[in-house]
Each structure stands twice: as C-alpha cells, then as structure tokens.
Length: 416
Image (cartoon, rainbow, N blue to C red; front, side):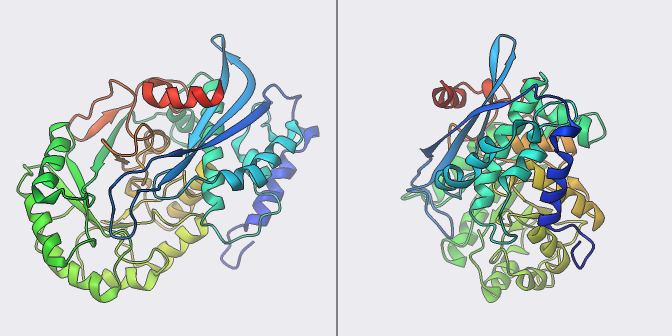
C-alpha cells in the first residue's frame, strides 16, 4: 500500500497476476494470435500555442484473436490520440512481446474470456512506477484494441458492456460532444476562423473550442470576440492555451477572459505545475479544464489533491488512449469518486470513439470531437448526427469503428 492507502503499481500487477493463475480459470476459449501495429501520419498545417502538427503521427494496432463472430474473425483495433506521436518502437520491443509470450490462460477471466485487466498486468511486468509520458501511450493503444475485441466477442457495443460491468447497467447512449478547432492556420485570419466555427454550429454543435496563446493577447481577444458574435442562446465558446502560459500570462489572460461567459479556460500552464493551477482559481471564477496531459491515476490524483480544482464547476480531460488505457482510467474514476468528484465532470480529450463509449457506459460528462481534423481517426460512425450538441451512439459491436467506412478501411488494411 502507498502512504495514502492506495495500492501501488507493483501490488496491482502482482495481485492481477495471482488472480490470473491458470489453475483458477478454465481452459482458454479466447486467445490472441497476433498483434499488428503501424505508424500512420495525421499531419496538418495547423498549430496551437505549443506545437505544430506538420509531422504528427499515431500508432494503429490490430489484436487478432482466434474467435469467430457472425462468420468473421474477432479483431480488436486501437489507436492513440493526436498530440502524442506513434509509439511503435515501444510496442514492438516490450509490450507486444509480453502479451504474446504470456501463458494464454493468464490473460483470461474466470469464464475463459480475454481479460483486459490481466493483459494490462502482463504488459506492465518489469515496468517501474513513474515516467508515464510515452509508454502510457503504447499501453493505452493496445488496451483500446483489447477492449474492442472483448466487446466484439460478446456481440455488444463497448458502452453496453461497460455499463453492465462497471456502471449502473443502463448506458446513456445520448452523449454531449463539443467541436474542437480554432487552431492557428497559415493565412486563415479572423474571417477564416469565423467560417470554421460557423460550420461547426451549423452541424449541430452547441459548444465550440478555439486555441489561444499562439498570438498576442490583443489578437486573441479579437479572435474570441469574433466567434462570440456567432453564438445564439444555448451556445458557448471554450478556449485552450495548451499549457503555454506562465503564471503572470495566465493571470493576464484570466483578466481578459473574465469579460466573457466562457464554457471553460483550458490547460493554462504546464500540466504538472499544480501550484500554478491552484493559484489560477484565485484569479478566474469561471470554469477551468485540464488533465489531458496527465497519463496515470497517480498524476491525476496529484492534480485533484494539489491543483485547486473545484468540483462544482471545473472539468477533467484525462484521455484513456494516452494514459495506459481503460484499465487505468477505471482506477482514475475510482480515485475521483473517493475525492468527491462525479464522473460527469470528466470530458475526455482526444475526439475518439473509445472515450465516447466510456462516456455512454460510465456516465461521463461528454466527449471532445474533431469534426474536420485528424481524419479518418476522429469523428463518429457514418450517419451519426450532432443534434443540439449531442450524439446518439448506434448499436454497433465493440467500439464501433466498423461503422466509419474510411476508418475501417485503414484498420482492415492492417489486419488483412
């Protein structure tokens, strides 16, 4: 146990492996045959306050099992969110071999089905605690594919499986989503920004988000005011500094932003500077959001302990695809509950269908969406429309990737 009563990683891994002893479970009825990965480009000319995306990549993974469902092999897919590069080397060198070398029975639950928790324990064997920045992405990507495979093997949408196993049994298929955009584009100007944001509003979004901190404060004020003029009653604007500001700049922006009724002021300073985040609560009464660049339950817990966040108005943006996957995200949700936070204050970063399924299955507050960026990995299954800022998830097995034709084509090419 840790000094604060929480099990440490070593204990969690050891206990998971003990529970997975072959003598305690039936013969394998589901086996991983192969895990494939590839690095894919999602480059774009856009930039935020910190980075440009001209060389951005992600990892795409396929977990091939020996199961058949409706005459087709059960294959789980996963990929990591934008903003962190593909992690194929770590997968090939450490995490994929550990899964494939594990005794198959140690990866199964009591029914003989693949257990993502035990697979996670196998991947994290011989990994020291701390140092979450890159391996958390590699593990989270594989974890996504494992959950996709497990839900497909049961013939259920992942959100329904999560509601049954970890929620109240009833998924909330209608989920709030907001449109993330408003990056700094070469030559876009305010007119282009306005056209972009109007396009999101026209597609049914009620909340849109734009970047700040990549221009001067005065220029950002003009960009914000131009977008605010578009909004009708019931519509809101969020702003995102991507961790760019020191305390003085964060306070200066807070004073400017206090003139407006914003949905939130996001990621003001370095994600690990909890003192800065706590101080900002003294200077900005409106909602703040952060957490997308914290990649473990332990770091999330430190944010809650020391970051001065207010559970009545602030938002948490932890992204399972970047932070060791859903197995770790479940631990984070348990931690939040112990500290008096509702899962409804979580709106994950990333704009992918995995977080959308978690939101529907476990009662999160919503999910980010990239209507036009990072395609084909962002967005929803074909035919899903945004209505009054919400989407209704279809009844597709697994995470639902097969319902998005352009994305499924990329995945099918990897698995074929």
